[in-house]
Structures are given as C-alpha cells and as structure tokens.
Figure 1 (spheres, rainbow, N blue to C red):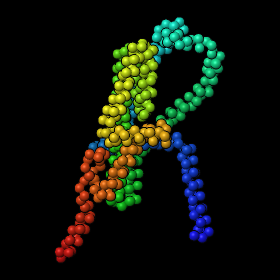
Figure 2: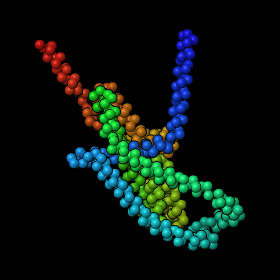
Figure 3: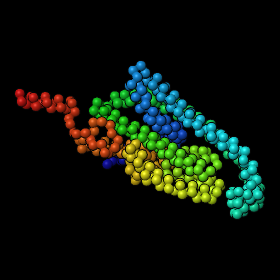
Figure 4: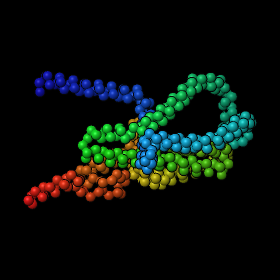
Length: 379
C-alpha cells in the first residue's frame, strides 16, 4: 500500500470521526425537540388505528375529518379525566391550606403524630438552632422559583407542540408511508409494511398496558388510604398513579410518599400502608406486568428488566420510558429476519411468538412463473 492510499484512508477515517462527532453534538443540542418528536410519535401510533378504523367504516369520513374526530374525543376524555381528578384535588388542597396553621401549631406544641415525631427526634430544637441557615436557604429560592416558572412554560409549550405534531403525524401518515414504500419493490415494501404494523401494535400495546397498570395502582392506593382515613387520599393516589408510569423507580417513589403520608396519620396506618405497597409491588412486578405485557407487547419479564436497565444507563428517564416498546420492536424485526431467512414469512401481521408462521407457499408471481415453466417443459 503506497503513501497516497494510506493518506486517502486516513482522511476518510478522520472525516467519518468528525462527522459522527458533529452529528452527536447536533443531537445533544436538539435533544428536547427530539424528545417531543418521539413522544408525539408514540401518541400518533396509539391513535392511528382509531383514525384508520373510523375512515374505513364511515365512507363519508375523510382522513382529515376522522383525525379531527378522534383527537377531539381523545382530548375530551383526557379533559374529563382531569376534571374528575381536579375537583377532589381542589377540595383537598383547600382543606390542606385551611388546616396548615393548626398543623404547624400542633407540631410546635408536640401534639399529634407529627408533633410527637418532631419532639422525639428534636426537630423543633434543630429548626430553632439553625434559623439563620434556613432563612438564607428560603431567601435563595427566588432563582429556583424562576426556574420552576421557566420549566412550567416550557412544559406547556412542549404539550402544545406534542399535540400538534401527533395530529399532523396521524393526518399525513398514509402519504408518508406510501411515499417511503414507493422507494422499494413490491415484495420488500409488503414486508416493511407488515413489520411496521407489528411495531405499531407493540407501541399501542405498551401504552395501553402501562396506563392500565397505573390506573389499577392508583385505585388500589386510593382505596387503602381511604379505608385507613389518611388525609388527602385522592391527591396521594393520583401522585402514586402518575409515578407508576415511570418504569423501574416510579412505583418505589410513589410508595415512599404514600407510606410517609400514612405515618403522619398513625403508626398503624403507616405499617399497613407499607405492607400494602410491598405486597402490591411484588404482585405488579411478578404477576400484573407479565400478565398484561405478555398480551400487549409479548416480552418476557427478564427481557423487560434487562431492557429497562440498559436504557436507563443510555438515555435516563426517556430511555426507561422507551425501553419496553423498543425491545418489542427489536424482537419483531429479529423474528421477521429469522422467518425470512428460514423461508417462513408470516402471511398476516403478528406480535406474539405463539402465532405460528405461515406455510412457506410460493407467492403468486413465482407460482405462475413456475406453472409457466412446467407447461413449457410438458410441451
């Protein structure tokens, strides 16, 4: 190999490294927009089957009208759910604001469960001896408040952006898919379409299963806290349900808040709540999640756990949220590649391995060509 060839290869390697670094830097700079696009894509995949069903069943319903109807219905359902939750939250929040001065007075006097706890562990003495430090900390919360307001504004803008992006994705999905598949021959395009349907079913199944598990967790938490007469049971149960949407750590975070709130009522309530969360998390991890995800995403528990652990290390919270559907998509692609390699393509889109591959029959064009060749040989 002469010096000119070595120099050429060296320049190519350097160019590839610089291009990769530039792309990674670009992805890091626009990571927030990428996150919004990914979340919008998940919502679009979840709502697209409803739009397609409405468009196919109602002949008079065009794509834009079906998309608008589905999004309005989804928005109304979400708004109704929020209204159902907000009414008790406002009532309990008003009650908390009314009872807060009395609760603070009880703590100072050592009355009640919290007051007894504070007196036993000398919390009041600690607060009095560190008054200046606490005052300085509270005075520095102005910047944190500005950051909170900025984050709230960003969250509102992100929510609106995600809604608009998901609407446009669903509306333009047929055109985008047809344009992409037009780049391939008919057989390869049919394979891509089949695998894409499987992947869409996996994403929809993951969203449905995760929401169902969180609703069950929230309802059971509300029931237990209500029976134990823990104050603000609805507010705590809502937090537990939302935290349970976060894989791996969400259930533990919600359990900590629920147990602490129960201990403020009484030691007995705290112990019962602690036992409830321990038992429920075991049932959720070993019974509820495998049962639901085995029918919606078709992943075994070991694959789910490994996927979440790796995704958390690679992409943090976003990785934890995307771990299960991404693992399901990888499984579908790998299974399809294996079936094609073995000459056993599936005739219909499937998700689970329990559905047997279709018999390896020749496609129509190959069957006709084979018949033509056999006829020519007979002639």
